[in-house]
Length: 236
Ligand SMILES: [Zn+2]
Image 1 (tube, rainbow, N blue to C red):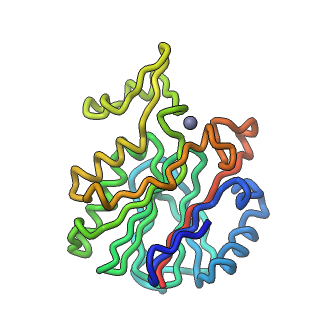
Image 2: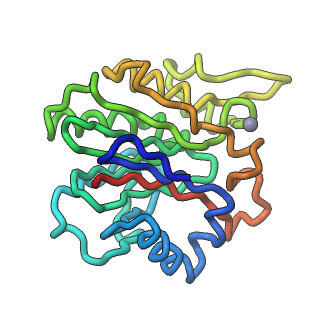
């Protein structure tokens, strides 16, 4: 599904129907080349995602070495001000977060699983926005994509052990099990850093685990070759 935010910015939210092959398959690069062409992009860039909170800022076309760059760099968010450059994240339960600053013609895409969320990936994107571009965060839009939500996102002891105290309100306890509200956690981080609540759109933040139109790692029986949906944002 393509969501056009305005005449200068669009988002592609992939789902199971647009994710026919695993990103671990040798054919995946061809799939991404087809997607680049379908979306009318000069470049499509995705990193090797490692569940941390570092990223790459594409400020010049000279940083790009080929029309489709996949996993040539390690990182969990991308920022660009370059028109025609699609920046992508791959998720299958983790939360894709898209940022758009219309006045500065700037976009970002972040991959926020629980590790990245707790490492503060959303705030690190905003810090880049303010430090490198001097942005007024009150004009930044944020769009959440499909991800595992608190209805299904059960977490185990390793999660609870890693949890900072301020994340405890985002744990839901049901029937002796614990569930993490990753979307709410990120939303709260964004608001505390200066994003206006009315500028956070969670309309596309459907649960990947109980909505079977999405790829879900946790639901998948193919853990080695699981499929994941691509979320892409680009400027014109
Ligand atoms: Zn669910």
